Amino acid sequence: MVKLAPQAVPDPDINEPTDVRQVFPQRVGSSTEGVVSTQHYLATQAGVEMLRNGGNAVDAAVAAAFALGVVEPAASGLGGQTMMLIHLAESKRTFCLDGGTRAPNRTPIGVLNRNEQLRGYMASTVPSTPAVLEYALRWYGTKSFADTLAPSIEAATKGYRISNLQHFLLKRELKHLRTHSASQFFLKGGKSLYPVAAIFKQPVLAETFKRLAEAGVEEFYQGEIAKAIHEDMEANGGLIRDDDLARIPWPVERKPITGKFGAARVATFAPPGAGRTLIEALNILQQLPESQRNPDMPEGVLALAHVIRKANLDRSDRPSDPALFAQELALDEDITHIEYAARVAKRIQKRLKTSGETTHLSVMDKEGNVVTLTQSIERVFGSFTASPKLGFLYNNYMSAFEYEDITHPYYLRPNAVPWASVAPTILFKRGKPWLALGSPGSERIVSAILQVLLRLDQGASPLDAVEAPRMHCNPEGKVSLEATRMRSDIPKLLKKHGFTIDERDPYSFYLGCVQLVRMTKAGIEGVADPRRDGSAEGP
Image (cartoon, rainbow, N blue to C red):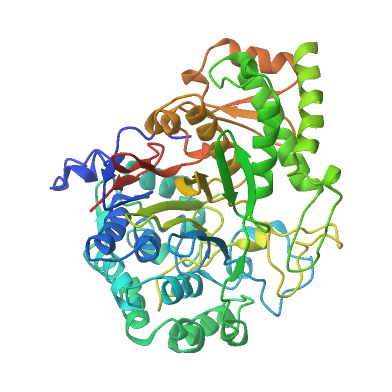
């Protein structure tokens, strides 16, 4: 566990940062020209640069997403996957870009052991991030591919300072880093930790970005980069080959899942994402009396624990993959339907009476275009492997498949897609985008978004809603919570009702990191969650 506020304090033996934002990022941004909110201030600046130079929200999101792979490499990068929810103001169109990764052609059906799923070359699936970001830019952006890659090249070349959080993650995973090929890039001399505030440069990664900027995204999948990945995988027992990469994993455009929350219409990510779970949880909450929806009171937290647990159980019990099965259910069996939520709410009320890692960014521009984007290499530092010629981490999405139920839509088979917990979300009022948000955190993504929306609905400011103490309940009934920031009688009540308690540090890294932008009468406002290294800024 780690405490993340305030930001990094420089090592006394290292020159202090000249930019105060390196120590104290701009958590709340406001502008009439647009706002970018990401999990690192340099990625935010990459997006802001696009807006300042006449780009739209898609340009800003793509530039920021590539930059996050440089300045937050433990969470995302060229070796991972990206999911996007986009709203285009001119056409009034809202859609998902499903950029799910795929298992390689040579995947052994359902047989990888846990170590092979988590670490090493066999843990990696076909990277989709370069294809997804280039596709979004080509069809919906205005800038060139090279323009959006320029900030990443600069950050990788000049370097950035290691934050408290990044130092903590390096230290936590030191054992695994030392025994895998990523050590050559993320440890000094392949063995020791970079201290807080040390300047971290990535020249090999910079060269990879330069090749992409010059040759285009096909270089990653059918050119010299693809050849380097093939050779690295073949030499180290990995499963990805040139024929996997040659079938470029372009994203699939899908309709979002929609619902209502108060006066707002909600659009969120369709399967394989976790938008169904969010809509179900919002529906159930709205069936409960107001007295049971206060997240600062014991009864409200107890109700939240029941709601989050039930929504996650339903997601596990009723998986949906639109690429494989229609899976059309009767309305009373559809977990996103309001009548189903009403029945669940009644059961929860009776109980009340009786007793990864991922990164997220959100962008809104002055024209009303919106992008909310979640991307990942799955767990922190992914597979802990990286090609010595390329400099980015391969993902470990092999850990996100089903391994026991052969009928399951996410069962491990060649070219299958894994489970995804992402839920980038846009809320609309009077037909126009009002709020966009999302979070990293695997199964904690929905619960983080849910609590922010609940607090906003009860009148909290965006910063207060994002910064407020947070909790999560897993399907087994374990409640993780920032206990020291909550009333002391809350854990006692949860225990009385049969939940187990997992106390986390204040501003817990584990409990998500919400990046939020919203439209106001005065312009656009953004908030970056203080739980990580993020910032929110406008041009």
